[in-house]
Image (cartoon, rainbow, N blue to C red; front, top):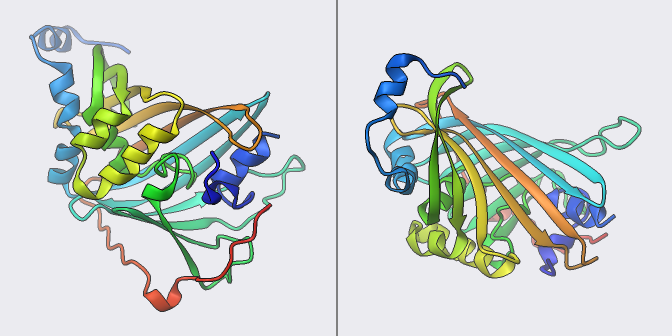
Length: 274
């Protein structure tokens, strides 16, 4: 994890990583689920199903653990799948004394780019920081403190194995649960054009391209919840970092007017390290 963006300090997930181096089924459902189907085909089409759905609200959770230390970053916002634009507000973990060390960070997600406000590290409060996701060794699957919801769906295009685990509920919605592994390199090749570069970077940057997942789809094939488990070596300290990234999607059709910042509002100065 030697990319400069991964050394930006404790204000974002990358900095946290550096510091860390420091189901019940009814009889009817069971009968329905006994019909033959191809889980891999279903999962390969999950991202396209989100595009058809248009928009949704999203909640994210990213838990990072290494050396007995564990931190969790949470996010909430909206996503426009047709234009692949999202907005999340991230809440960073408290310090050991229970004090919030940093204001919530606003993130805008776009094909090939991540924009952050309230970034800290010497960036003026009214300015945005822009990051090229293809330049990050993890393709921004981890760096920003939240996996882009559409990227999380795109990862399923590379699913190599998948098993149907039965029906359950997520937030009151009946869903089908699938568990398997996806391959980052395969996902990169199958992804939408704007996401290929970032996923290809992740395929090269992680120690392994194999990523275990659990995903829950509603009866329309829309992702309601997806979790990925990433593992990589922190280049600063050589420590292994385990990351569990979970995305919850709900409120499909909700307004999602996401506008990217003007060039004059993007910070062009030096980002403090540490």
